[in-house]
Image 1 (cartoon, each protein chain N blue to C red):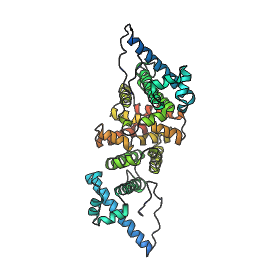
Image 2 (image 1 turned 90 degrees about the horizontal axis):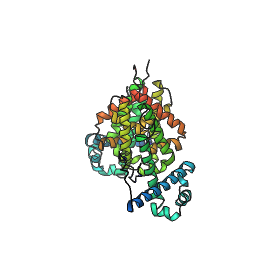
Image 3 (image 1 turned 60 degrees about the vertical axis):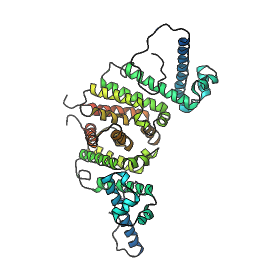
Length: 213
Length: 213
C-alpha cells in the first residue's frame, strides 16, 4: 500500500501502479518511507506511554534519527500530532476496507460492525485528546473521515438486512463513538475501555437483531 | 408550580408551601410572575418566528410592557436567551416528570421514552443554536440538565425491562439527541423534523425490544 499524506479523507480505492522508479521518484518514495517510519515511531510511543509522551525529541530518538529531521518534516508538535492522526485514521480505513476479518471483508456484517466500533474506540483511547481538539465546531460532523465511517457503517447495516432509516441509524451509531463523548465517559464517568467495548457490541446487536428469524 | 430561576438543573420535587404572603413576599411573587410572562412571550415568538425574531423590543411588545422592563430584567439579549433556555428546559422537565402521559407518568415506558426524545427534538428545533452555544466544551456532557435527562432515560429503560448496561445505553440514546448533531442533521444533511422523530422512535423500539416475549 502506497503511503498517503491525504488528510483524514477516504483512501484511494486502488494502490498506485508499481512501475520502476528513478531519480526524483525514488527520492519521493524514500521521503514517504521515512515519514511513515517517524509516524510509526510516534504511534508506538502513544500506545506505550500516552499522547503526552510524544515530543519531537522522543520521536527522533525512537526512530533513530536526528531531532532536526523531525522538525524539518512536521514543523512543530502540533504538526506532528495532526500527521499522526491522519496516519492513524488511514490505518483504520485500510484495516476496515482491506484488512483481515472481522474488521475487514469476509466476516458477518454484524461482527464487522462490532469490530469497527472497537477499533474506533481503541483509536479514541490512544488519540482521544487530539481527535477531540481536531473535531471542534462544524468540523465535528463534516470531517471527511466521518463521512467515510458513515458510509462504512451504513453499508454494514444494509448487509445485515437492517430495514428502516439506515443513514440516520448510522449517524446515531457513530454519535456513540464521538471522541468528546467517549473521553467524557472514560475521564468523568470513569468507564473502563472494556465496558465501552461491550456497550458498543450490545448496542450493535440490539439495533441489528430481527425477531422471528 | 412555583416559578423557578434555577439554571438548567433538576426541578424541586415538591412545590413550595402555599402560605399567605404579604409585603416583600408578595413583591417577589409579582416579579416572578412578570418574569414568567416575559419568557412565555419570548418562547411564543421563537415558536412562531424563530430564534432570530427574539429581540428585546419584540418581547416587550408581545408582553405589552415597556422595553426598559425587559432590559432591567435580563440585561441584554444573551441574558434573555439564557433565561429562555432555562425556562424551556424547566418546562420540559416539568412535562416529563409531572405532566400528562405519554410524556409524563402513566404511559408505557417505551412510549414515554419516545415522547421524551420527540419533546427534546422539538426543543432543539426551536432553540438549537442557543443550546449548541450553551453546551460547548466539557459543559456539553456535564450540564446538570443532561444528568436529569440521563436519569430519566435510564429509569424508563429499566421500567421497560431492558437488561445490560443501562447507564451506558442511556448515554448513547442521549447522544443521538445532542443539539450539535441534530442541527447538523437538519441544516447540513437536510433531514426534516419528521424524519428525526421517526428515527428516534425506531431507535427506541430497537434497543428496548426483546425477542421471544
